[in-house]
Length: 117
Image (cartoon, rainbow, N blue to C red; front, side):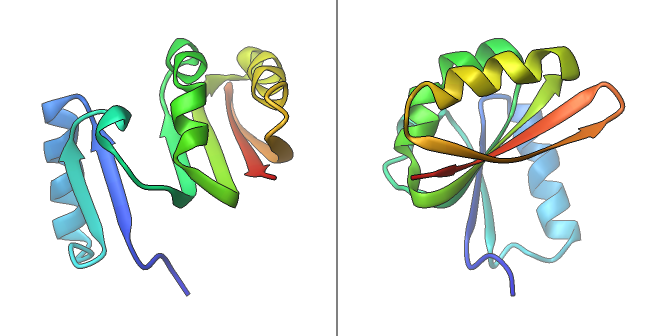
């Protein structure tokens, strides 16, 4: 069981090219599409939204990320230092739209997972 469709976006052309190479190398181009752009260009909602950017970006993009997440969908936030995780988690929980499901750590990095109510 896996994803039926994956859309990856990035504003950095080099990151988009590297992602496309990885998609081709892993032979998943029938499922995964990668585009240069921003979240503002997306007009759909998704079952899972993953954002791997810094703390400032995650705070700034809170509403757009939530807008693109379906009800009962999962939001995964990474790119955070451990010391930043609790504060960001509280910021997202204050919306009243999410429940925290788990966090994981690898060294000094933390990943937060929420589910939309």
